[in-house]
Image (cartoon, rainbow, N blue to C red; front, side, top):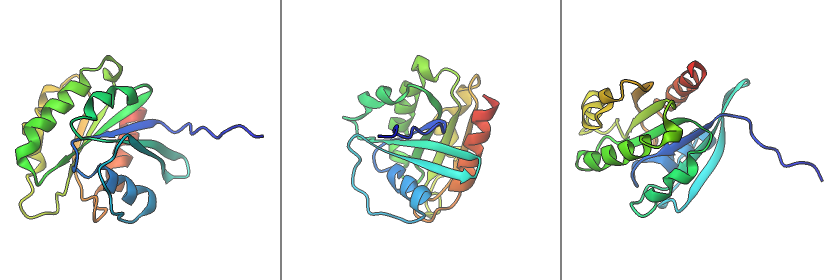
Amino acid sequence: MGQAHVSHAPKVVLMGLDSSGKTTLLAHLLRGQVADTSPTIGFNVGTLNLDKNLSLTLWDVGGQKGMRPNWTFYLDDCKALVFVVDSNDPGRLPEAQNALKKVLSDERLRDVPLMVLANKNDLPSALSIEEISTQLNLPSYSKRSWEIQACSALKGLGLQQAFLSVCTMIKKG
């Protein structure tokens, strides 16, 4: 019996409200295709290989209200937090802002960089990343390394660039 292979790729946790597009995003990144998804109960995990020397272990954690108290179970050894928001659903941004603020208050995330992905940004009525940044109160996180990028999980737009940025943020530490 050999030892189980444990990935040494940095752990990146994907969080966000339910229906923000985390699972679609993960499916697109890992398989290059869109999968029909249902609400995630628990988590999905996979390794994203960006190039031969660069990979990340991505944890996609269920975002329904009842699941959010469990988010703290996924924070050990987290090297970056990727928070996904639905750019096309401004009515839920206050809820997203509260969820983000709560998770970032965890001591284990004190020096962890934050990447906010403004998903569904290809839709005509989507908010701009400036509007989302303001609504989520990102400028208040001045002591934290953070970025916000627009993307479309369905079309795969902006995902590669966003996760290359995440790698850079992790390296800067």
